[in-house]
Length: 234
Ligand SMILES: [Zn+2]
Image (cartoon, rainbow, N blue to C red):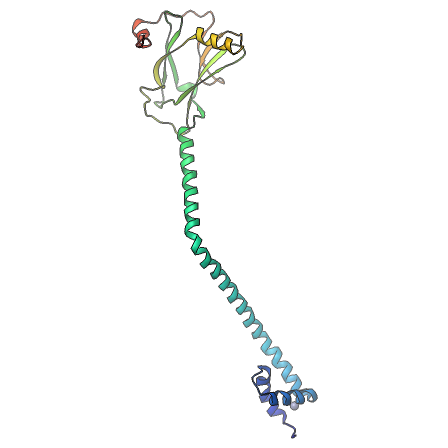
């Protein structure tokens, strides 16, 4: 077999490297590079010079695959995206709605003392204590909480949600005549095993309440017009 010249081998090396040559060419190149240091070096350089961009190509391929994977997940997600979106939107709506309910319905705020106006405190014929209460800030009161302590102090605590309303402020709990029935309250306390009689009645937060009456305090008699308001059912 004729010895193939180095020039021919060098021309064939790229084909050999890319493995796109015949078996005969492959064997010829391997036989030559096994004994020719120059051609072996050229082949090695070819590997190095091609390996770098090849490495980059492989990396790009991987990134391409990565992107494909992301796209695959994305496409799969699209199927459930609507459901997810719906669930999320529903959750957000629920949170907003609950928050709205909370801010407008939960009566967690004591009405501050400086907007509570208690007037016309008087003693009704049957001993009840009548009074007029008005919230001077014009906002309604949603509920009155009652609380008594072991010293016989009785508190009527007007409460509001954080978002307060002016609705019914003129005719509701924020502007009305009302009364305290001490006899009945004492009876209830006794039923609950608390012997301490009510010593004082306050309106507002126990931290800073307005005194309506305390034991020993003389009150004017309730006028007939006001008293009549509490007796329309009789
Ligand atoms: Zn050679």
